[in-house]
Amino acid sequence: MEKVRFHITVKGIVIYKGKVLALKRVRPSSDGLGYWEMPGGGLEYGETPHEALVRELKEETGLDIEIIKPVYTFTAIRPNYQTVGIGFLAIPTNDHVILSDEHTDFKFVHSDELKELLDPQIYNDIILTLKEYENVTKNNNQD
Image (cartoon, rainbow, N blue to C red; front, side):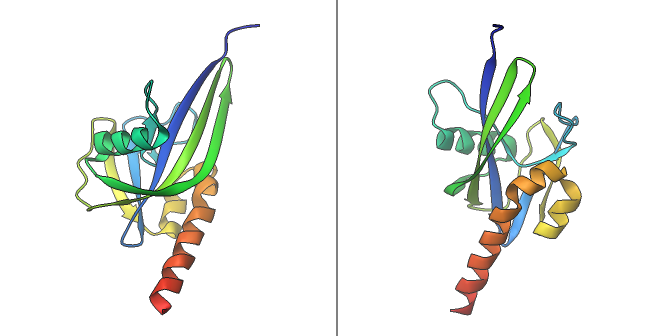
């Protein structure tokens, strides 16, 4: 059997003042998922998923975040290579984004606008989390 490689990645659904952070890649994804994505990246040896997300968000956006909870998982299978991912709901301490050289643009957008930016595969992975967040926020504002 051929050697199969595994890659573990983390992604953040970063919500600030009711809007979600989306990043535009320099080049489209090698997975065919387009230019726009959620911030995040791969774990380095010895890191926990939480540590990796905090590091990746700082590297890609300059933001410090508070991780609320893990909210979804995903996988991408290619010949001899598999990515397994964990998505986290996170809140930044501010909205002052400083992009790394991996991205050319960013937007904080409402969930309906996000649908226009993201590949449907990515959007479908996160929409339930966005709806849950919106419901919790509405309920908290009614109290």
